[in-house]
Length: 101
Image (tube, rainbow, N blue to C red; front, side):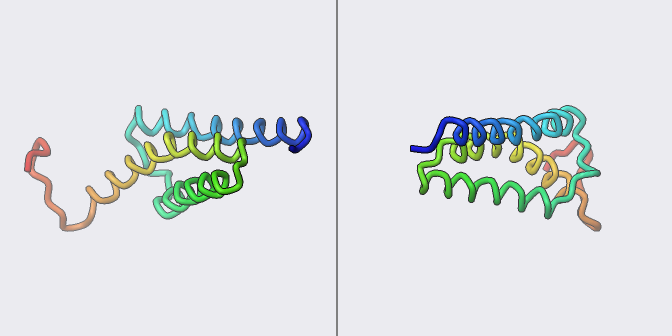
């Protein structure tokens, strides 16, 4: 068992990482503006977080598990919006008025 201070440090860092992504996710969902977000970076970040969650599960590491199973929620919201905008704005792709297929 690790000392309390080490565990507290891990949980503190994990919670701040999780909280740091929330303002961007809220702003992106509310405004729909993803122009300042890099699709490759956001996609790799989301994948990295999911891999860290798997790593935490394999190690049975509480802070890793907690943070990396929560972070994908706001990260996925941002990634989904960015993908929607990126895929919907390809040159030559036509969209009927009103979005109907």
